[in-house]
Image (cartoon, rainbow, N blue to C red):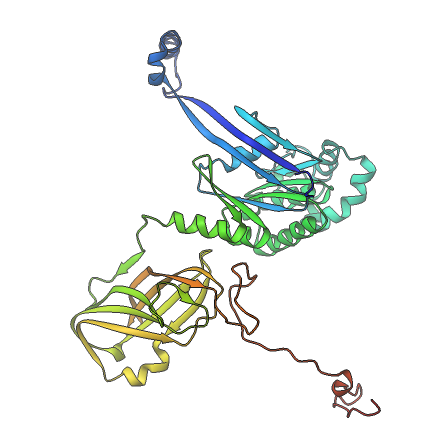
Length: 434
């Protein structure tokens, strides 16, 4: 029987009323706007001229269990931050309910919960008190917090003197170490440097293993896919998708690309340009099985006869998170292609024996160089869908395989005696007496 959800959200809605007139700058304008507002209230039909309603959230419902890390992703204005402000009890919902069981710590923006005039030391003690911890409990965690934040030499300086990065480091250290049962994070980790982000990710994973619940809002799709088990996609205040973190990230990124140009770049002075591109599978299917042969085909358009030895073509395969996972270039076949010349339209075919990537949707980009200079680029020349197949002897590869690249491998057991190493000489000794 599943345990009671730690975070329970049902039919949550939030409406903001925005007046459309500009704010008054003098007494005459204030009197005019006040009179117009009174007329609007008296005649509801005229209200739209002076006020409009903006729904930040509409009918949002979800549960988060103990020890789960739930990601929330979506474009700007989707309602992500509004959701966290309601869960943090900063603002009230227009309708619906949001329940959280346990001690909550939230980090919504740089400097959240800090008094700018107090030192870092005093702010740590203040935040501990706000969370209901005794002064002794907070002091017991003090050194661990300061060590994690890396601001020890500035700990007795008012936080208003801190840089935004220093404030985020200390704020996250406080929020993550003062034993919260629920941690709400909103985009703040993007301010820290790469090393600190890695520490934060490790800390969030450690908290989840310890039974803590985390709600993580971020535009960094790779971080959501790495840290979260599940995720929801918000769009225009509604839940557009919910599922595993990787599937949600893929849905968000692919849907965001609809109607967007393919990122085509063309040098107008170059005699050669990129035309179309396509993926051909060995069995003629639209999707390609993992481990099966395939071809990437690109059409080149040459306004004048051009030697292939003057050109170089590269294919780039990108994961939905934006990570480049494969690169193919014509370096290996330059001698065989050196004597070829193209004029008009010609198709260049790159044959791959296999593509050892996990199941999912990918995009293929094309780069075209002439005499070493980039003359053409199409960021999304073709879409590639990989479906599970018998890549490993044990069977098909699941879509939730934890790494993007598949490696063929085998395991054997080596008896300890046959692997003994003489500590003095470093040479392997023979196996005897077994």
